[in-house]
Figure 1 (cartoon, helix red, strand yellow):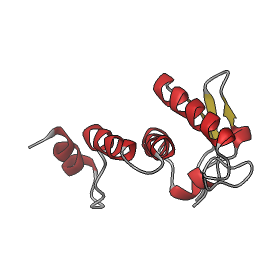
Figure 2 (cartoon, one colour):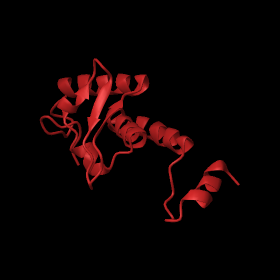
Figure 3 (cartoon, helix red, strand yellow):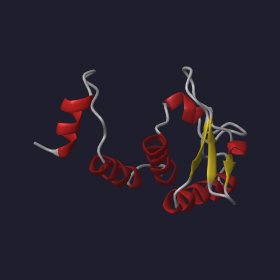
Length: 119
């Protein structure tokens, strides 16, 4: 029995399956082979590391990201607490690459002004 299964049996009675770090790495590898590899890998990383819902990621404004201090303000939905999260170095590099790419190829990436990504 894996560690994840043990934890699930002990603490989780809702039937929710949690994503493991190995599964996230597999998703990141797959994202690198997609049409928008930088954006897709960043989406997977941010959803996983910050525990974001899809709507929280889509509503994320560029003003909420402080690249100099490597921090991001997360506004939670569904009565959650808003927090400032640190951005890890690999995530920060990917975020900067995405923002550079987005500035140079703005018409090719489907985003709204001020939003990081769009549904």
